[in-house]
Image (cartoon, rainbow, N blue to C red; front, side, top):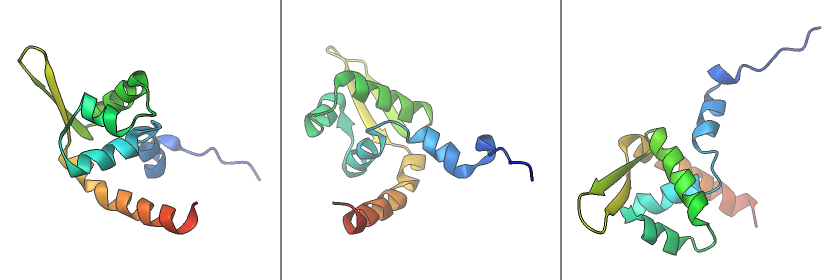
Length: 106
């Protein structure tokens, strides 16, 4: 019998994994589920994340349409992040993951 090659392009789980691949992406989504936040506010809530890593994960989520980045034309620049409808649709899944983690991880 021949081994089958897994088709990651058409696998829904693989596609979701690409979106949430960043170390902090789900945590960022969780924080944004509570409020619209500025970069500095997210950084303050996640003191162990580096600015480079936070920027990378925010850009990743924005590129997939999960979060919205709103830039205000003021000096100094004001940038706020919020969940899009797509991001909000993922919240029930985050809640289930939270329940699973409470039950099975320490």
